[in-house]
Amino acid sequence: MDAPEQETVPRRRAGARWAAVSGLGAVAVLSTVLLTDPWGAAEPGTGAPAVTATAPVEAVSAPPTTDAPSAAASSDRPAAAAPVRLVVEDARFDVAVLPLAPSAQELATELLVPPDTLDGYWLTPYGMPGEGSENTTYITGHSWEDRDAPFNRLSDPGLVGSEIELQTATGTLEYVVDSVVTHDKNTLKDSDIWRIVPDRLVIVSCYTEDLWGKNVVLTASPAQA
Image (cartoon, rainbow, N blue to C red; front, side, top):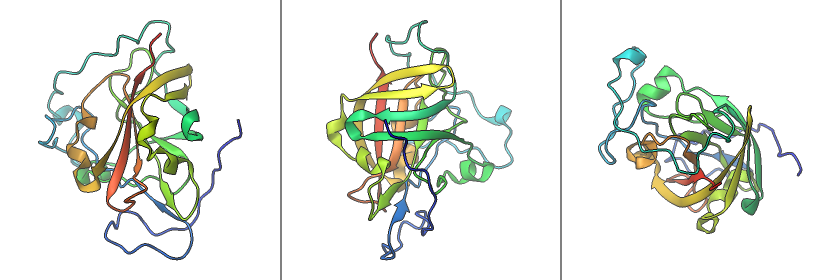
C-alpha cells in the first residue's frame, strides 16, 4: 500500500487547550497526552504519582500486580521489539512509528505533546510489543483540523473488532481492537489505560468531535492464534 505522508507544518501548539481554533489552514491538534508514570498506575481514578525531574528510577515504588498477558500470546510470536509501522486497514490508516522518550519534565508535569508530524510515536519508557512484553505499548499521534490525516480516522467506534497490524524490528504482530473510547484531556492520566497489561496496545489521539477537549483511545489485544 502507499506510504503515508510525512511532513511538518507550522501550527499553534495544542497544549493550549483553551485557545480559539485557528482559521489559518490545517492545524495539528493532539493528544495533549496526560501521562502517568511508566512503572505502573495506581488504582483507576486515584492518579498515579508522577516521576519527578530529580527522582531516580530506583525511587519509584514497586508497581501493582499486573494483568496477565492475553492467552493469544505464544512463543511463536516475534520477540518484543520496537514498533516501526502501524496499519489499520479498516480505517485506511498506515503510518510510520518513531520512538519518543518523554523528558523528565514531561513525566513530572504529566504532559506530553508529540512532534508536529503525521507519524505515530511510541512512548519508549512503557511497554514494547511482542513475546516477552512486560507492559502496555502506547502509540500516539496528532489529529488535524481542516485536512484529512491518518489519526483523524481513529475517532470511530465502528473500529471495535478491526484488525491492527503492528510491524516491529523482529516481525509483524496482529491485534484486534477491543474498545474505542474518549477521555477528557485533563483526566486521561487517571484512566485505567495506564494499568500494566503486557502486550496490550493503546493508541491515543485527539477526538475529532472535540479536538481541544477530548482524546480518543483505542485499546487492542493480540489476535487469537
